[in-house]
Length: 167
Image 1 (cartoon, rainbow, N blue to C red):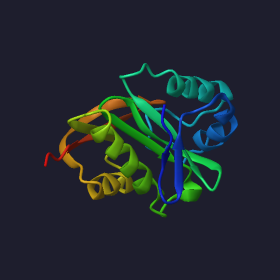
Image 2: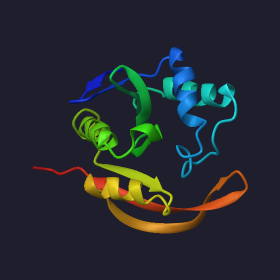
Image 3: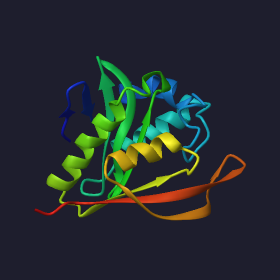
Image 4: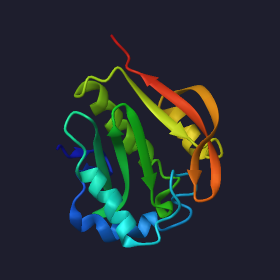
């Protein structure tokens, strides 16, 4: 798998030695406040997530960990084509880093993988993520209630699409 570089970031394939850094991010309630699972209580939960990132079958998806100044700060990619997903350590929010990371992922998805469209499923309470997707050119297609059971709480979804621009 490829490594992507932006002005401030390196997006690279996940490795086994990413477990501790990724767990420190995924155990934080703020990080996973709108994720499809509760915060990770055990390293085993994060190890399963990491294993899933590392074993995506070729041609079915492509997921990256994000490094900033040599530190793992999140993940961005397409766990399964065409669904884009991302998370970022709250210590790095509001710096434009996820916009930068997703820009690289989107460009690769269209140019290298030849995808015609990308999709995103966002909790409607996650206003920052919705704004991010809209700035990246995604548009809302529809909403649905009770799509994710996270812990003991049902959460809703708002769905977004980004179509590849054909010149």
